[in-house]
Image 1 (cartoon, protein in one colour):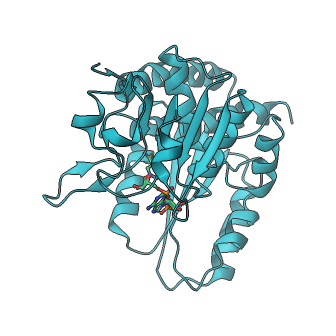
Image 2 (cartoon, rainbow, N blue to C red; image 1 turned 60 degrees about the vertical axis):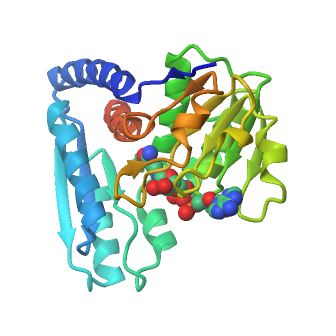
Length: 284
Ligand code: NAD
C-alpha cells in the first residue's frame, strides 16, 4: 500500500480563508481580533515562531502585538505585563512563547493568563474544560491534528489510537481529544516496554517524540493512519519528523509529511482560537 498524503498546508490554507471571512464580519461589528505574543530572551527558534504568528495575524486581518522582553527580565515584571494585557479590551489572545528562562516559574506564568484569553489552551482551567468536554480553547497542535483527520474524512469512534509521547502540549492533550471522540487510547512514552507491541495495534498512530526516524515500518500496522508531529533536523541538517517517511508511507493508509503536515495547522488553530475569543468577548 502507498499511503495517501494528508496535506496540512492545503488544509490550513482552506481553514485560514474561512477564518479571514469571519474576521471581516467581526470587524464590521467594530471588533478586530488582537493577539499579544510575549517573547522573553533571544532564542532564535522562538523568534522564528513568533514572526510567523505575527505574519499569520496580518494576513487574516487581525491585530498582533509583539512584546519583547530581555532574558534577565524578572518574573514580577513578566507577570505584571500579563496582568496589563488581561485587562486590555483590544487584546483577545495572550501567548507567552515557551521556553522561558529558568529563573521564571513557567506554571505561574501560564496560570496568570486569563483563561478567557488563553488561546494556547495551556491554562489548567482550560485543560480541565477540555477533559470534561466543555467549551474551551483547545491546545493548537492537538486541535490541528483533529482537524486534519476530520478534513481527510477519517473516522475516530471505536478506533485504536496510540500516542507516542506524553508532553503537556502535544501527547497528553491529543490523546484526550481522541478519547472525547470515542477512540480507545493508549499512551506510550520513554518508559514504555515493548513499544512495537502497542504501536502495531494502532489504527491511528500519533508520533510526538522529537527523535528523527523514530517510527519505522516495523512499528505500524498495514493501512494505519500515521500522524507525524515531530519537527527535527536530521544529520544533514534537513527538516524531518519522527517517522521514517519513505518506508512508513509504503505500509500506511494515510500519512502526514514533514514539512507541510501538522506544522501549518498549529498556527492556524491559534488564529482560530483568537477569533473565537474575540467573538465571545462581544457577549461579555
Ligand atoms: P517533549 O520532548 O516534551 O516530549 C517527548 C516525549 O517523547 C516524552 O513524553 C517522552 O516520554 C517521549 N519519548 C522519548 N523517548 C521515547 C522513547 N524512546 N519511546 C517512547 N517515547 C519516548 O516533546 P513535545 O514538546 O511533545 O514535542 C515532540 C516533537 O513534536 C518535537 O519534535 C517537537 O519539535 C514537535 N512539535 C511540533 C509541533 C508542531 O506544530 N508540529 C508542536 C509542538 C511540538
